[in-house]
Amino acid sequence: MKKTAVVTAGTAGIGLETALGLSAAGFSVTVVGRNADRGARAVERINATSPAHPARFLEVRALADRIASGHAASGDPLTVLVNNVGAMFGDRRDLGGVEASFVVNHLSPYLLTELLLTTLTAGAPSRIVNVTSGAVGVAKRVFDAVEPSGGYYGFHWYGRAKLANLAYTIDLAARLDGTGVSVFAADPGGAATDMTNGTMTDPKIVSPALRLMWPLVRRRFVRSTSGPASVAARPSIVAATDEALAGRTGIVIGAQARPVAPFRGATDPRVAEAVRRLSERHAPLEATT
Image (cartoon, rainbow, N blue to C red; front, top):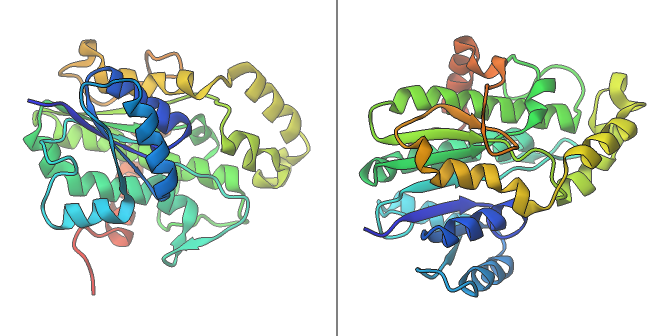
């Protein structure tokens, strides 16, 4: 049976390098994104490596249509889903009436994962890989609403959304234990991406208490941990393909591409329950009219 994988935000950066790695490992890869031109270039680059199976591109809307019509994204049982999508915003913005950072970094991968669970179970043994971030360490852990109290600071809100997704990941692993679907988180560490070279250069993305020190802290962080996207993609590729992880679940693969202890706040069952309620409220599995 053909091994198939879906990589969200797979048209550039870490996502593209993840797709290339999975293709090299023998997967038929579908990259998901919003820009058809970037998608075409990504597919061309993947196929230039002479993979066993040609890659393809689906816009998010087209993928949602396939899910809604009951078809697997690739036409074959899905064996790997990598939720690589992520974004940090310098200013508060909405997507569909909900704060954008929470939508992109948690609600979107949460909804896609939940809608694909039947397909992933049919393709078992299969794996879900959710890309996390060290920014979870600066996050508020209260999830009674999408937006925390206080002013908008992009780095902290990004971290909070990633914490929600990490808590969901660990909770999902427990839910799916015994189904043949393994669930992992992958931390790429620092990477030279549009986010680190763009949004993260603005001190206004952190709270006033950190603002004066932010340029120094960021420079030290980027210099000490940032590498090319191909290196940052390794944790995701390992989580998706390493045979040593077969039958295991609920594991975080750290920036050195080895298992690490999960951030403690993400293992709190109270956080997981609050995130579950919030997710179900703002991203219901059944379409509403």
